[in-house]
Image (cartoon, rainbow, N blue to C red; front, top):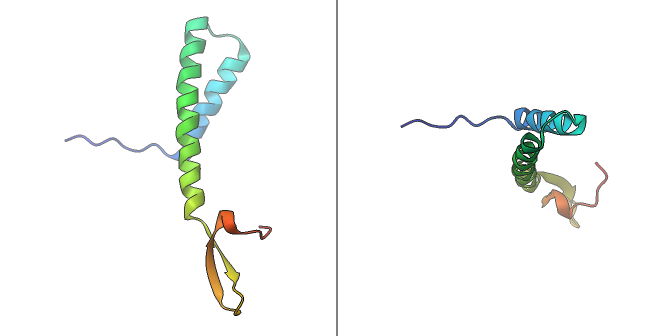
Length: 81
């Protein structure tokens, strides 16, 4: 059984940036531009989803009312980081 090797976030982001540069150059044919746009929007959505999952995993240690350290999800934190 063959398994797919996961491409890193950074590699996928680089690929998206390359697509954007090609589209912005204006040197691609209409069909290729549409294909790049479709591929890019799908890639952007998957990258955004991965970022959301990473954000959910982040926690910030803060002092609770009793002085003890408390773990809180990052989005609940009002600390300037």
